[in-house]
Amino acid sequence: MILVGSQRGGAASLARHLMNSFENDHVTVHELRGFTGSNLRDAFDEAHAVSLGTKCQQFLFSLSFNPPKDAKASLDDLLLAVERAEKTLGLEDQPRALVIHEKNGRRHLHAVWSRIDAETMKAINLPFYKSRLNQLSRDLFLDHGWELPEGYQSRFWRNPLNFTLAEWQQTQRLGLDPREIKLIFRRAWERSDNLASFRSALEEHGYYIARGDRRGHVAVDLNGEVFPVARFAGLKTKDVTARLGPPDQLAGVEETTARVQRLLGERVRSMLEETEQKHARRLKPLLDQYRAQVLAQRQDRQDLKMAQDLRRRRETAERQSRFRRGLAALLDFLTGRSARMRRENERDAEACKRRDHLEREAMMHHQLAARRSLQSNIAQLRARHQKVMVNIACQIARLIDARTPGRQRGSEFERGPSL
Image 1: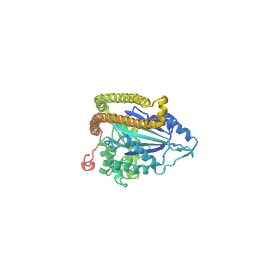
Image 2 (image 1 turned 135 degrees about the horizontal axis):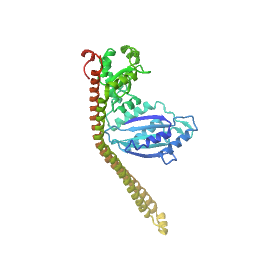
Image 3 (image 1 turned 60 degrees about the vertical axis):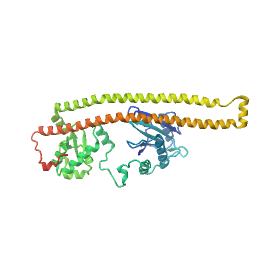
Image 4 (image 1 turned 90 degrees about the vertical axis):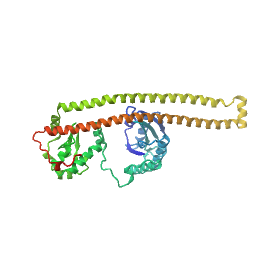
């Protein structure tokens, strides 16, 4: 499974993030070990208070455990991975919190440890934790027989379309995959040998080259988003300048954006808005069904918890009633009957605990299966909408090109083959 860890402070913000039930279907605090607080916020505040006796600013270590998309990982699998990670990092017996998130028909786990050793009042050092977690992640894939991601197949392999968190957030606002955008920039670069041909290749997909404030050559899309050419094409700034020339010869971002907006016109914007509204109308029943499903699943879990609590109290009372009182109790103690009864009750209690755990796991897997089915319908609808939006973007690009006064299209050789 994929492991993503980081040293951090910010106890309050981390607690809010982990308990966010708006972005997650279900949030469960599975364990609070080594804290006196009874909830996540109090536990992290306690870790912060202990860290004040040291100079450590990043007193927490947060680690997420994400099984593959189609893998059926049990709770025991996740907890075993937590134990292995804890041993790998050298965080054994440190206070920790375990939080389980479920969304989009999948389940993953977050583990957070306090890095402060309460006996020495020093922060536990975690050297090379990323490489160690990568190795553990690879081992977990192999141990479970899951298909190994390409990034783990060779230590020298590197995805040329890697993107940063900022790039991902930017492209998420547009509803596009950042890998697709980077592919457009890379192909445009491969097809061009000067500024004119590169400009033409980008504009076929709705990106317009401009002069950035501090980033040299950039491209502006139809929504006014700015994309640094060097970063999205996977190049060095000096190589971009060598082929395209100094950015001073280009119009600025504001001027380019204004020109694109003028060319776009009200009719095209109306077409985009109409498409978005149509998509929203089609998506609304599925989202309503999703929200109703989440509420029903939460109620089912609450009902199961109440039923199990009631049964546990009844079974505890029944086990307690097996012990006799008065002189009979003294006789049972002397003959060893009480000790045998106690051991039997402990075995019975453990079996009941395991039974309750299996019932909760069965309900969880059933609910995840139902959630995956609905999520598949939502994903298919969004994928169709994205294809429509890409087609519209291409049509807009051709429309703008046709409306640009005095614009001379390059030859077919200069433009290269259509993507």
